[in-house]
Image (tube, rainbow, N blue to C red; front, side, top):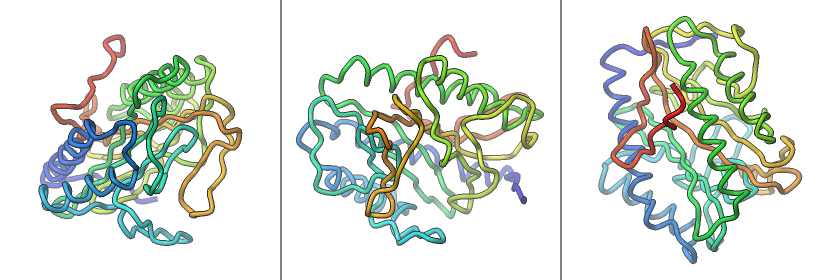
Length: 266
């Protein structure tokens, strides 16, 4: 396994890519409302990335081994869709929760982030799932520093999710990122403390827990991309791109509209 540590010059490019990614999510937020289609959201994001930011939407035509090329510029996953939802003609409606996952390529480097959005008046159960998943993200981030282990991140996420009555999707995980969309290491959202790779300053990876209200089992839809919960329960996800520093971490996917971490997480 080869894990790259980013040079100061690379880190600076990734700060720019991360900020631009977060700004796409800021831009699209007012458009996430009842009646809009996920295809329209995708087109708005595409045009903003390409025409305003002068960047590249990384998901468009992305084709890892065994997959057909991804046909859109962002992922939009609604309600029981776990991740990689392909935007299309489906209209958002009051009560929906939707994850928008954006990856921008700027000057050859990637920024990757996702947020949950709530459409109109959502249920108490949906709001709680989104909130606990946000807390899982930040509890995982809070473990990051040089000398810690990947298992520390996964354990913190798994413990909070399961204590809250939820389950952690295991088939998908965070990942190293840089000049490539997906690099080593794989960042699992479950695990045991003090296990796994030891973190070193300069590593950059995503943390992106997918938390289900029901069981953890998932299945793939006919489009070959969209992942859903097998029991049709709600699923939520939040994601940031993180830089490991000597004493702590730096969140690279930040902008004016980025939600701050919960006050109680140190």
